[in-house]
Image (cartoon, rainbow, N blue to C red; front, side, top):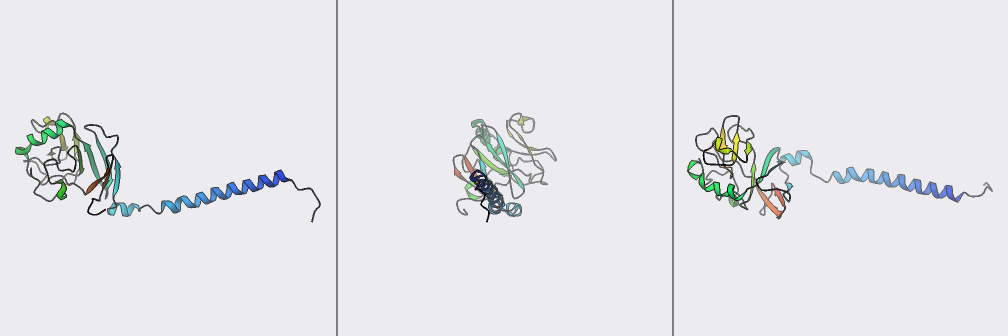
Length: 196
């Protein structure tokens, strides 16, 4: 043993430095471990529910989320858009949504749980293209209808409830996925009250 005096400052520095390095290492090991608790990309595409925040959604705005590898649209419909749904009935192929393209709770005139919030899979039922949302000037496609969805690939058109117009290649209305409102500003797509 040496009789040299103990350098307490150096000892304190080494103790703190070792603690900091150990803490960083523990955090570095914990992050991937905790991240492994999330569903894998394969599980998400297989149908794991996804959540969307709609707190900043403005009137007429469309946001997209991905569920099962497909685009899902969420639109906050304006009062004028909701009013146009009744004007389009005589021009639609399936106005009462008789084809099973939606859950039972969305089998109504607006094809949604809340009239102002529209949720649909953004894939044309003709050949799987993704239609374009036209907020204004949809009358260039369908006379008397101000807003809707237009598939530029083959000319299919849908109203603001995702119902297909007659005389276009698409055979069915847009698909409505299962979804539920977690609260007023959050939607979970891929689950509803019956499955959650």
